[in-house]
Image (cartoon, rainbow, N blue to C red):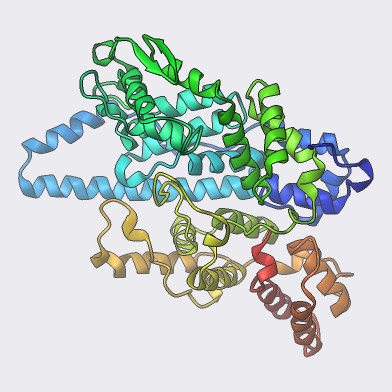
Length: 500
């Protein structure tokens, strides 16, 4: 189990698979460059991303607002009319910040120098699923994503502790209401059920005693940061998972991570995220041992996974349905086109079924086949055409679905939002498709089809779908830009393109 891939099998096909799973895909040139490394060197290049400068610039608003709590408190002293006016302004500002944050994150996935860091941050966002609707403060959501980014491939204990003390999490799971004499059990339950162990590996007593230990983890009054408040902590003895002591929250996390099940739980979930098929007993045990041997640090585990022969098995390669984030970031990357405006980007992700910063529930997104519904598949086809054609194309219908999920949005404002969306689409340039192919690629239809498959599939179409493209190309007089654009659109509308 987890034996390294034989050196003879490391080639451009394997490099393409690695970029699809550990990143958001790669152009033919990027695949060729990665394949030129040794397998170990290629994996190291992706995993050791801190060697590369992070060039992303935080939004101007992404900083603490010391007066925020007092601004909200002061609303009570205003007239009803003035209070409503202030609330509208706050909601409008919050909506704009959320849209900007979502679009900038997709841009980091598509074009940033550290794609694995963004892939892991996306994983943690779904794992510690927290929603802007309840948190309400865009800065706190930005701060949480930055926490995931900072600890993305580091020690599990540090990440789990940081996630538990994160202000957005304290609001999301009501940790800020957890106090001695009146413990709130939400975080204590979810930290075991969803984050570390899974159902059936803890007791109701563990939840009660764990909740007592987490008392005192709170928000600093009037500030957007964590503060341990001893006056709220239950200092009595607790018995948790058979161990007794005057435990604090950090002690509970260490006891949980000492359980062998915790290694198997998180490594299996990571394998499913990156590889696809759930690991069988033998592979699951091997992943858990590798993680324990790494000191429960994720970077060495990821290297082991990405180097293993199991990661490149036929049942793994090109057999994972792209998430909306993977689909959108990857399509932008492969088209080598600029990002669409924030309003357009957000509407696309909403239509596709994955609104960043707004997972559907505490379990996050189901993923897999759940990404594909009749409606979502049609949206993929329509939005692929929009990315290809930009403002020249017809506006896809239904692009306002889900915007009401943002706090304060009224469906009565649909016409105004639609106008903004139309403006955004008008300002979206078409993809420059001709630059994606060489003169040789465009010299005849057979070479062009092969180039299409290499760029967008890193493989070949199913025979019946390849025949559709051949028939289309056979009817064309030449491979002019409109023909190239339509051929790409036809490929994007195949089931093959929905897989990575």
